[in-house]
Image 1 (cartoon, rainbow, N blue to C red):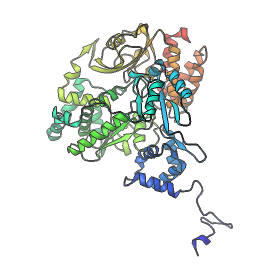
Image 2: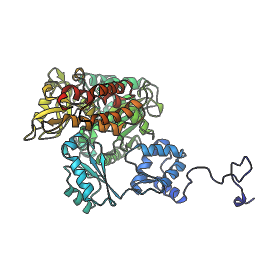
Image 3: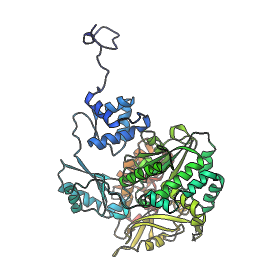
Image 4: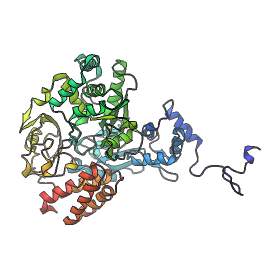
Length: 561
């Protein structure tokens, strides 16, 4: 019987049956598009997000037909591909009958530092002054450039101290690609003795000695958790092989930009530290998860990883650079691992911890970018590079990302015992006409502290008695011209947008908190009840720490609420 004479497939009863399965059908043209884009790349499940980026970059959006074709090519359920694509902010999924977005997208950062610098007025001016059919203007979370606020991204080009005039000039010049800043390439780093320590360790190094040196230096995780870095190595090294390593480069906490600062200047200090840590745990492979908001950093790392491969320092493919897609939650280590595996970035329940069950269910060492920067320096210069500095009873150095109402925003390397007074002084003092009022010591999760608490050393464990913490040392300084109430609302709107939605206390709690905080007068008993539920019942640190801005504002700025 000829194929066109068949009455249908899956026929189990009288009737015509179905010639095709239910759901969206495979489009041959879209399938060829996807096959051409993927080329000889492996059809591995964990590469899904990378391939979604390929489609987004090529077509400016991801059509339903391309989603179907990608699912076919990777042998995945269409629903699974759709769930992943719609989870991340940087993918534009367009269904049948929907209009694709304009060719050009402008993302205006509206996190706290940019809002203080006039981001809302900038966004309004762009929306009214640009042709909406040609340019899309979106609000966006922190882009890690708080020192040059207000900031926007046009295509992949960041415009610092942005104005409508600068945007118009960039559009006219078609200047929509990332600008690569001057940095130290492999050859220059190697000429100055770079990778000599790594080679020596690989030849005859003692892991226990290096680990003890890190402990003597006092190095702790600088992504926010503050766990002693050397101890992590033992946990992973003692587990069965194969073991992996993952670098958390998803620096999404509003106010922080220290990782970008180091990567755009000395990427090989970080890379050597990373390879030392990988050697220490005998990692079979290293994954670098870098946020998509750092296109220049991504390009720098692509170039310099290739240089390491050419030099024979690593085998091709040993370092796997993965590109995030606009999800703050992937800064949480288990959510990052889910994303590396090509899934939605949903935090895992723990235990088990990632040191035992991490990437592909194997033991995984996770470090922050700055932590690895210091690993290289400690191994090269000795423990004294950190522990020789002491202030206010605290040892070590901290990279403070400073922004807000100061003269010289930027990354300031200061003693770990520095107070906000010291930090403001290092940043050139307050802006003219502004008087110090409050500060965010470690990102929105740390809340707001008043100027009267200016004598507290900003270091690990010093702020917890006050209901706050240092986190990633993302310091934002507010003045008497700013509203603590408005700042707290900005922080909760960020959490509302960035909640992964997995647990109800966080998803619904952030939404309800934003509504309650918009009232002229806050219902403080109700907000406190809400804060307790969020802190006690949320799965990960986002929901657990989101109440901090609310509680500290009620405590220290009662006259504003």
